[in-house]
Amino acid sequence: MTVHFVGAGPGAADLLTLRAVTLLQAADVCLYAGTYLDEVLSHCRPDARLVDTQHLTLDEITDHLVRAHADGLEVVRLCSGDPSLYSAVHEQARRLDAAGVSWDVTPGVPAYAAAAALVGAELTVPRVAQSVVLTRPQARSTAMPSGEKLSAFAATGATLVLHLAITRTRELAAELATHYGADCPVVVVASATQPRELVLRGTLADIAAQVEAARLRRAAVILVGPALAPDVRGGESFLYAADRERPARRSPDETRAPDAS
Image (cartoon, rainbow, N blue to C red; front, side, top):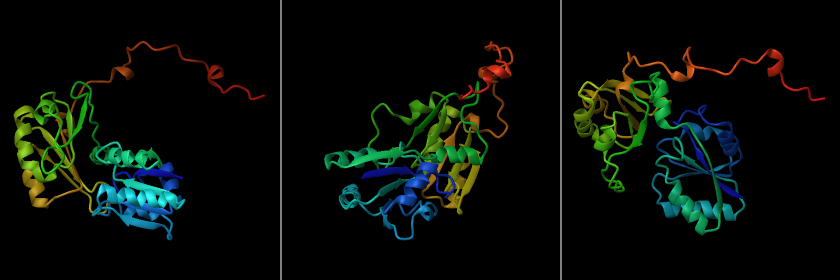
């Protein structure tokens, strides 16, 4: 048996991969973070054992995974968004390796992608921004590596995606304004794709007041950068340029699938 780390996407029950749904439907045990993933659990069988992990330590979570595996049960560990970002998969996988338990990962729709989709934004607009930085601030959390300073990322002018930052919006906006300018566009999306979804649009000058008025405290992502302006006008992608040299077009006969006979 294998422990499956599954990306649950931003929260909507229909924004999972087909593989994720298949694994959830087959799961005997599903561990999930109760603050985020209620809708996604609709894919689990009625008789599946559901374990809310929001108040558990990593060792307690791992103990559930190891015991279920030892009992020969199909186990899914749901991760909000995509497991490659802030999911603690690394720590849990290390413990499973030590216990001799096999595991795999199924990706999911990350929160920042869902947020960008809601406002119809491309985060990499030609001649405006061609890089996206996914990061978080330092607060009551694990220390950031010494080279990963928010000011250093901001100095590049890239589109910034701030996770786990909503309670520090005011101070972060003030810091970022020194690099992007106070009129730089900002999008805040809370509980993306869920019934309580909220989208705020503003600038580094006014977004903190909006966040505070909405009393946002968690499950929100902050997007910052000129590419987020509703009226952004960038360049044209060279890939699709009319004057770009392209291979000669193939005839219909050349593109037809070969005869199986």
